[in-house]
Length: 86
Image (tube, rainbow, N blue to C red):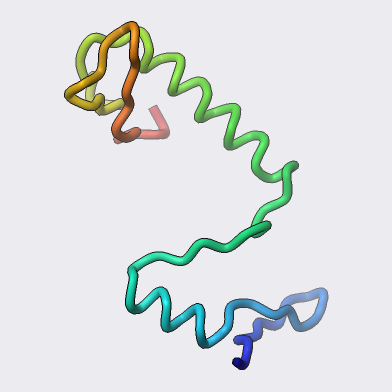
């Protein structure tokens, strides 16, 4: 199982294995643990939380946030963020 490598300013880093590439090609996704640090995730989580709070107040999709059909104000269900830059 050979890892694919990438060269960065800091040196050579292991990336994903051939087995992982094959899994991705078969299943269409690959879960990679610890890809980002907590410090890298924190600002993204903060923005996502803001969208979730906004979605909780919606009674229908607003063109920025798409709601699930089962969405209610009591049980908010956000399907996706259509325009994350708005």
